[in-house]
Length: 266
Image 1 (cartoon, helix red, strand yellow):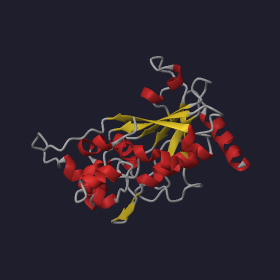
Image 2: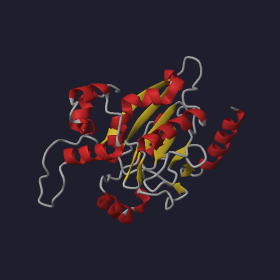
Image 3: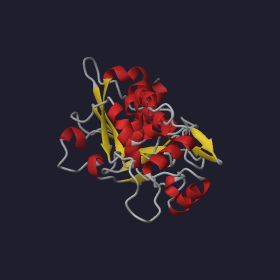
Image 4: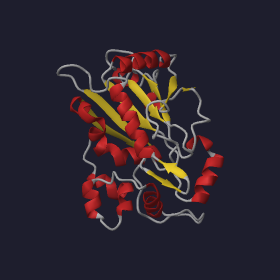
């Protein structure tokens, strides 16, 4: 235990630097939390810098589309290598919006909260746990590794007697779809710490609808994409009620129109 706290202290000391968030790799602690190409995934972290923010945790899953066949993934990794491998990630980033540390429009508890930007390199909207055509679709393992780190390294759920931490768990676009899929499972993923954590969802643009594309560019229908991602990535966080509603079409439970009615976390 003392070793974990020592690691947490060193990491915390490293990431407080002018609002920047430094990269923390899963390489040494979670060997199975990997990118599409098998390199270790990771996240950018900044600890709370006020008493008002120390019990607030913001986790934001990065956006970036997805892929579900060899040709599409190969093209994706050439055009956007940062979505397939961690070898090109910068050591530090400065993120705006809800992760900003200087945005005066944010309440102080949000502006000074513990903040995490989970990098996206699994190409499965953070949902899957499978290998296909030589690639690793391990988004669910990456999310689990992150939540484990927040508990074991940084103290999520240890707010003190009678005090609960608040975890704002969300993302944008593909990150929001992943957050939607995992949201009701987050307490179980936190383990014993969940008793002292209030989980709230923050979903930015996950609400895909089952309609045909309205253009002539040859875009694939959103439901068809979701079904193919499910088939390739073997996503298991389908929601018991959603899976029961669509027993022969589990891919629907990755699509906002069909999944959101069954999400119970506020």
